[in-house]
Image 1 (cartoon, rainbow, N blue to C red):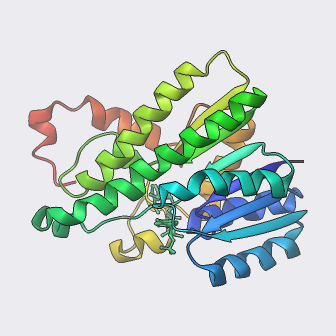
Image 2: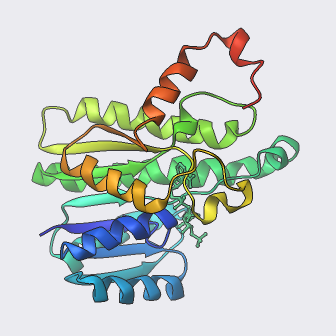
Length: 245
Ligand SMILES: NC(=O)c1ccc[n+]([C@@H]2O[C@H](COP(=O)([O-])OP(=O)(O)OC[C@H]3O[C@@H](n4cnc5c(N)ncnc54)[C@H](OP(=O)(O)O)[C@@H]3O)[C@@H](O)[C@H]2O)c1
């Protein structure tokens, strides 16, 4: 049965994925900032059937804590099969345009801390030549748009990092998976209103579980974002720049 470390343990998307793992009887180690929210999720997952659920409150922007978080997770779960990275922030694009000193938090949270934790975990997984690293980025990282290019460029940074890591580990027993959701109905997007293509976190969770089980390298969720982004990436810059997206 799976032993899973989740970064962002009570994020809207992670909670739905964890519910499915709990029903499969997985052992989970959840990390998030709020102890109280982690406790609520832990109790819920135990009721659903999780074998065991450990929690740790931590700010993942504190890079110095990463190694010890990983060590505690490995010790508590008696090993680790899967690292699932599912945290981040959606910054106010307009505010960052006006206040450049606030840019740092976006890149620290959405890119640097993610890359730092994954790199720390690779060293652990490589010593066992086994394990899966699955990271939630975003379709927003596929093309710079005026409405969210600070967030998108941080996600793009992680995408290229993961692609390179996958390339490096291709012949090893490790799997590196990039998960690219479109717009999902979670606390992160509550300010955006109900968009036409907004997906439920339940649906996204199903795609994530299936994609990981099938050993996919890149999971678009819902699936149609692969084709939407395929078209958007093909648009010439002159045409793209005229679009109100
Ligand atoms: N929702 C979407 O439309 C969408 C689309 C594409 C990709 N994604 C990605 O999916 C992932 C999960 O997001 P979500 O939609 O589930 O949103 P969410 O419910 O708002 O979850 C984001 C989580 O990240 C946590 N977090 C932020 N900064 C942190 C830090 N420094 N240390 C520890 N935890 C931190 C937040 O904790 P606090 O509540 O304590 O701040 C929150 O639990 C993110 O990577 C997001 O970028 C979401």
